Image (cartoon, rainbow, N blue to C red; front, top):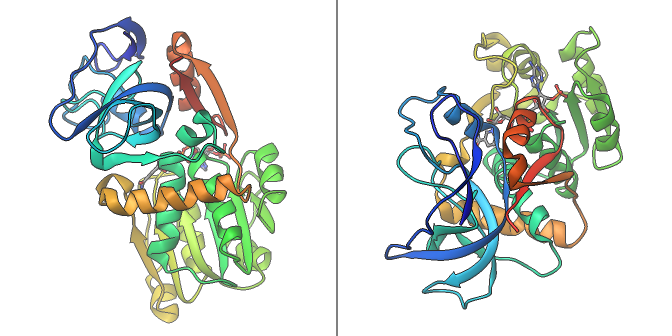
Length: 319
Ligand SMILES: NC(=O)c1ccc[n+]([C@@H]2O[C@H](COP(=O)([O-])OP(=O)(O)OC[C@H]3O[C@@H](n4cnc5c(N)ncnc54)[C@H](OP(=O)(O)O)[C@@H]3O)[C@@H](O)[C@H]2O)c1
């Protein structure tokens, strides 16, 4: 069986031949067609998450067809998610993979395998962020890191939820332009010097009710200052920095809140429900994904490209 393998922590994954895995009780065996790359996996492989052990097969999530399962017939197309690989378990980047039966979701025929694989972690994270914020229609929303995988989903899902306004904040102009045609009512280019708090409020048409934040650091501090009475910032990532100084006066005045979210620490049942919603929106044509499909043989270069913020979802083909 062909697979990708991180042979030593600090190495790029490379294509290898491995034995097929055997499913344990409660696990399905899956013929994998597509597996998406996600930033957290790069941190594991690079040794930036303590406790990782190589060699291992990466791949947090995948799409394929059931070979054996106690809950679904053979041939069923499913999306599945694994525990974060590299901590004693292998992942989805192999022709045959195992997955917990409880982590399977049958896919509608109208969504292709690459798109279904790409939509997983990023779509679930964006959707969970809005659920955690209790977002309502007509609310003013901003997405920090909008040009990334999570951000692109968050902008579009905010529009699906009939936000009053959706401000996409990022640095990559072409993707910001794309977002304005796909749900954003305004965009802010972080490379242009400006008072971010002020332009966020102006671009949104008033103080923000909900911020989905994949950046942290300086942009998050400015966005917290732009929150409305009862505003919520849901942080999912820290691509722009690990430190913030909370603007407490502004937070007390607005009774605003900052909440953290990790899909990795969210119960699978909640993630499946969020994914079902996202796939439904894709099937209905309400949202789109920018997918870049690459062969397994290119796993090393694809991994390096993911580290450079590709502004697309890189999906590895296993067929
Ligand atoms: N909490 C969770 O459950 C969860 C789930 C998925 C992802 N995440 C995390 O959320 C973050 C985003 O994930 P993703 O999948 O969207 O990643 P991604 O596709 O790699 O996007 C990250 C984006 O961050 C922007 N960026 C990078 N460095 C920046 C900087 N110094 N200042 C401002 N913007 C910067 C880049 O856009 P520009 O080039 O336009 O700046 C890039 O498109 C990552 O930290 C990831 O680990 C968390």
